[in-house]
Image (cartoon, rainbow, N blue to C red; front, top):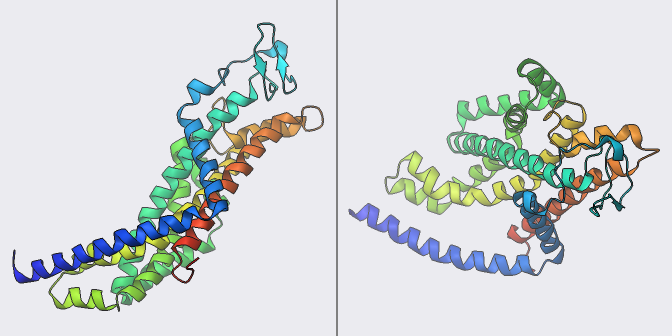
Length: 304
């Protein structure tokens, strides 16, 4: 190991030790925020429910029973099984479909955020660090992306490729990178002028090494906050596309698709649309509360 590598390793070790203490302090601040903990509890409940859906679901979400269609919440069949949330227009259990619908919402949310977050992170790092014509090109692409209505893009792409789970993920993921890129770019513009980055460059570190080992870890915090809050938006977008018939196709249960089925029966069977709507509301609220708490906790200007 030469002198340069030894010096840089020592700096990284000391930074890692400080970072560990900072994360413990941040965790303590997060625990003191009750709304954030409530949001985290809601998110964990939904995630666990989606993972163990076959174990906790009282019925098969695809099983139809036209004889017992549109039964009210709490209805009990001849075998003694209770439909806590009632049945839909095809006799399928609402609770089972809500539980299984969480799988689609979370899968689309996580996958789309991963795609757009990774793409936005890479573009933001390169654009903010190198500047010049590279920055101009990426930021003009971002302006074009923002000027194009998302719903028109979704309709055009899905109309050509057809509605499916992976097409929805790709459309949402590719169209949502701009906010990540701009947040990371703004952070990198500040970081590249900091002393530790200039010191790494003066010691002979290449651009790739500086970006990965010095800039990226410090730009990750605002990216994480944006990704957490964006998860709620993606779930709402997926539900909207499913409501319009552009999402995952029946008979796969989705919250937006259940809302579309229930709108016809609002006056006669209110539970068809109410319970999937509540599922969307509670999940998005939980994610937003946790995201707000995470943002406030990671904000260096707030020390409470």
